[in-house]
Length: 102
Image (cartoon, rainbow, N blue to C red):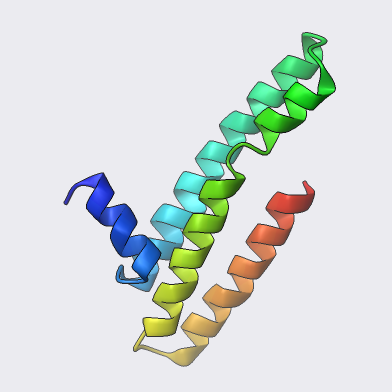
């Protein structure tokens, strides 16, 4: 399966909840945000304009919203234990709030 097809399936909520949540939202988003934060801190230490550091820090936000939306849609389609879907949605909300304010 190619990445473009996977991203399309993620957006449409067609991926299994486990894959959408753990791979695309948590793992990939965490890696992107970690690199962006390190790059932003490096810019601050290099005395670059703070607006540039802030822009770099928030650069992964579109992907974060994209992955959160896809994981939410996968949770809507989840046919297993409803508590798993509800728990995933609660964590998705917390994840996005944390990314916005940290």
